[in-house]
Length: 242
Ligand code: MN
Image (cartoon, rainbow, N blue to C red; front, side, top):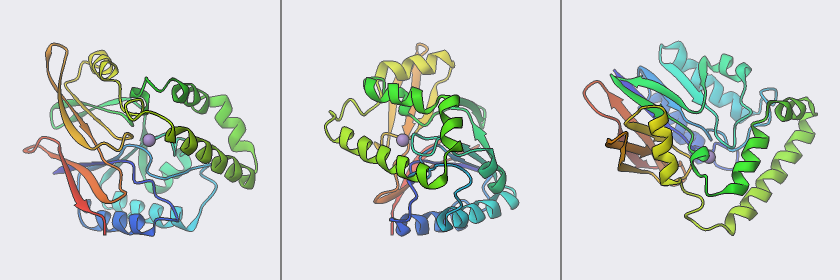
C-alpha cells in the first residue's frame, strides 16, 4: 500500500502539458494507491464550484474514477484555489483537509500544510491571506456573477505577480523559526508542504529531536511527488514533465 502527495500543479488552460502529465500520473503512478493527498494550488485559479470549465470537468472525471476505484482522495486549499468547496469535493469523491492537519502516515504523525502560512516574513501577503480566508469575504465574493468574479481573479493575479517580482527571494520562502514553532505546536517530527516551489528534504531540530521537512515541487518543468509506504519513509521524487 502506498500514499502519494502532490501540490502546486497550477492547472490551467494555458498549460495543457501539465494537464496531460497529471492525467498520465493518475493512470500510472496513482493507480491503485491507498491515498492521494493534493496539498494546494492544484488549480492556478478557482472562483467557485459553479464555474465548470472543460478543464475542470476533465480533471474532475479523472479524479472521480480514481476515488471510485478505492483510492482515498484528500484536498487542501492553496493560495490560488482556496475557493474550492464541498460541491467540487463531492463531485470527485475527496475529503477537504484543514491547513494544517496532522495525519498518521504508517505510524508517524505527519503535519500537512500548503505552506503559504509559513512565509511570515512576507507581511503584506499574510494580511492579504487573512482577508481572502475570511468567510464573510468569501461568501460575498461567491454571490457575485461569474463573469465579475473572473475579472477580479485576473486582476488579483496580475497584482500578485507584479508584487512578487520586487520581493527578495528569502521573503518568499518559509521562516525557519515559524516551521519549528508549528511543528512543536503539533508535536510532530515530520512536515510535508508545497507552495514555495523549492522542492527539497530538510533536516532540522524540533521538540529537541531531529525532524524533517519535505517540500513538494511545482509542476512547471518536472513532475514532483512524495511517495510513502509502510516500508518506505516519505521520499521526494521527480520526473521530467513531458
Ligand atoms: Mn501556493
